[in-house]
Structures are given as C-alpha cells and as structure tokens.
Amino acid sequence: MYIILGVLFIIILFLIFLYNRLIKLNMRVKNAYAGIDNQLKRRADLIPNLVEVTKGYAKYESETLERLVLARTSTIEQQARQSEEISKSLKKLLALSEAYPDLKASEVFSNLQVELTGTEDKIAYARQFYNDCVQHFNTAIQTFPNNIMASILKYEEKPYFQINDDDRKNVDIKL
Image 1: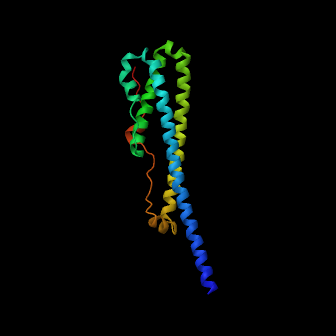
Image 2 (image 1 turned 120 degrees about the vertical axis):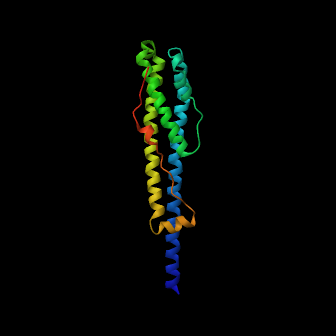
Image 3 (image 1 turned 90 degrees about the horizontal axis):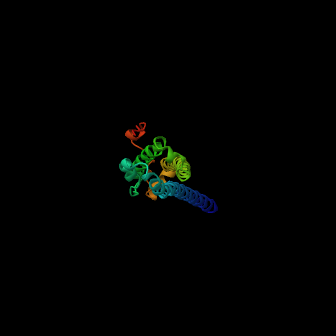
C-alpha cells in the first residue's frame, strides 16, 4: 500500500514538474516577443523625430519618409515583414546625410542616428533571443514525456521571427 502511494506521489510530482516547466517556457517565449515589441515601439517613437529633422533636406524622399511611419501590426509574420521594410527605409534615410552635409552636421540628426542605430541592434538581439526561446519551447513540446503534457495543454509550435528571401537582399540606395 505504501509503495503504491509512494509511486503515485512520485508520478504526481513528475507531472507537476513537467507542467511547470512547459508553463515557464511558454511564458519565456511571450516575454521574448514582448521584448521585440518593446524595441519596435521604441523605434516607432524615434522615427517621427528623425523624419521631422530630415524633411527639410529631403522633400523628394517623401515616399521613404511615409513608409517609416507605417502602423504597427500584430502577428509575428507581419511584424517581421514590416520590420525589415522599415529597416531598409531607415538605411535609405540615414544615407541621405551623405547627400546633405548640413543634415549630417546637425547634432539633432546625429543623435537620432545614433539612437536608431542602437535601437536596430537591440531589435536584432531581441529577435535572436525570441527565436532562441521559441527553439527551446518547440523542442520541449516535441520531446517525450513533455509532448504528452504539451498535448494535454494544447500547446503548439510557436513561429520563429523570420523575414522572407526578398528582404535578405542588400538595399539598393539611390539618391
């Protein structure tokens, strides 16, 4: 009788451990995604300032400027696509400083450029961290015995933060 109770107790502890582990991994993925969202929001807050400083120097680049002020999207796939488009537009915008020496010499523009460069680096780190968390979570829900608990919890694989092949090409900057 005590042996059966002991075995049941161990099984229950093991199930609690599996459950808690999967919950923690799921929460870590959500936290990592929030980190990406936070950095994208930071970039979205900085871009209008950079656009305003640049407008006087680059009136003909209005399409690039307008692209930078796009509304944010909600799904990981949409955010990945939009993020890459904004990154390309930022590269074009920052390249304008070469064509406009007064703009390049502007302290406000320089500070904004440094902030945006730092933010782009933080976004890249946040993407990598998110993808690492997703890989860990996806591996956990596919391995035995976690896969049993994952199916009970109805956990499915999380998508990676990816860009499409067209976005992997170098940006062609034409001034």
